[in-house]
Amino acid sequence: MSKHKMTTKTKIIWILLLIGFAAMEFPGVFFFQDMVDPFIFGFPFIYGYILCWWAYMAVILLYAYRTDWGHAVK
Amino acid sequence: MTGQNIGALVIIGLFMLIPLAMGAIAGKKSLPTTEDFFVQGRGMGSIAVFFTVAATWWSAFAFMGSNALFYARGPLYWTAIAWNILFGVLYFVVGKRVWFFGKTNNYITPKDFFKHQYGSEALGNIVAIIMLLFTLPYLQIQLTGGAYLIEVASGGLINFKLAALMFYVVIIIYVWSGGLRAVAWTDIFYGVLLFFGMIYGGIYIANLLGGPVEMFEQLRVIKPENLALQPNAWMAWLAMFIITPVGAFMGPQLWTRMYAVKSPKLFNLMPFLLGFAAIAYIGSMLVGNSAVILEPTIEQADKVLPVILYKYAPFVLASLIIACGAAAAMSTANSQIHAMSAVYTVDIHKAYINKNLSERKLVWVGRWTILILSAIAYVMALYVPGLLVTIGLVALAGTAQVMIPTLGAFFWRRSTVAGATAGLLVGIGLLVLFTFVPTTVPGVFAFGGGGLLSLICNLIVFVVVSSFTKPRPKALMDELDRQYEDFDSKRY
Image (tube, chains in turn brown, orange):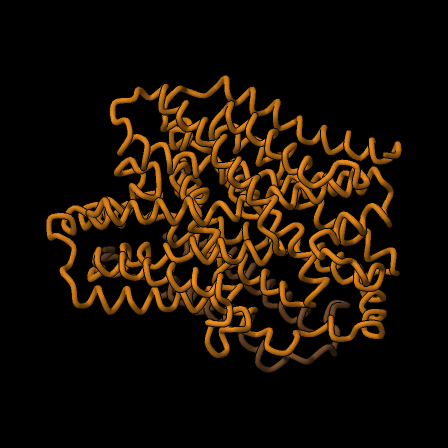
């Protein structure tokens, strides 16, 4: 088993990703199930809502890559 | 058959011939060894890896099944945006470890991993059988999807049986020739085609109705229930989010794409690349929803894309986009057949039937296996009915079961052979029961969550049985710990 300890930055990346997954999967089906309005980016609510979180996740994943998933060292 | 039908088939045919040429060239670079034929000597470059993973992951399920689901069930398939990101994250977390141990211990097939990590030949055999049995229906939907496209493109003159046979023959020819190198080269071609084809097709069709905003406003009047999730869709939404990426990731074709990687740095970038590529689903979302307005009475929802394109787009454009759909099916099918051939050749034939075969002869066994397995999938395509997504989800729920002992091997010292075996048998047993007797799925899981429930039961049995049975031998754990120290020290 790995004995490697996660850095603080790595933990933050994982927490942000988990928030993103939870936001994409749960509110859309439990709270906004019947919502059509407001349209977001010209799409019905559920489509636009998920696209917003997709953009959030893309930024986090790009940041993760740029920092070697929190392990990059100057 | 009209001149346009002939033109459409010529365009699709040309798109199939380009990969054939690539396969022939790749075949000349191949070495007659199982390691080269099955994992390209573990030397696949980053661009090839990204495209071969993406094109293998995006199949007829994604290209045609997504349109069908947007058409028939509104936004349900939109959970794919999240599952694509989850797939990328799995490639980073699990893929990097599988790659490292594969490279260190010379694994070629998934069975090699389980046989070594758990010290059990029997567990390895169970995994090999699960891989073979549950990848077949997923291969079947690629042939079915490809056949639908050719059937519609020919104006119905080439019937479904003949179309599926044509698809089958082309795949066989080029997987036969060049092994994984040929498959990866063609996947670069297919991957680019697939991404732009999906997006452009959607934008073109939505613009026929005045653009996406105008199209959705029309849909609000014609069929408002298509704009929000339908009642009880939440279970299918969550189950698809888990089962689809985990099942696809555990397919033998993805194990090959973990073993074959040259540079471990690629694993850090893959979550971003695969997550970003999910934006292509906007295309199928636009096609599926536009089709509700343009053609509200299509009986076979899986044919939505070709029917809409050939009716409303110029036939050259329609044929080009349909060729992208054929590429989606083809690029997944070739990888699946190739990986299943590796599982049979190395795990079964070499281990139990003829241990003394030369490397060159083993490659030939692999080729004949390709022929036979895809023939079985062809027969299934003719006689097993169902929506592409429905059949695909059963197949993915089967291979997803393998994720539990995989994670156990990496992250839980108490994982035991008995726990892994019992968990897999319970998970697969329940999945088979839920598939053939759907009325047995209990409670909320009855709304599309049978596969997810079988995976949860697998996990519970795995943890409980592992907690009460003999741990893996100390010598084995010490060896794995030493390898993990190497993994940690190199900070892959």
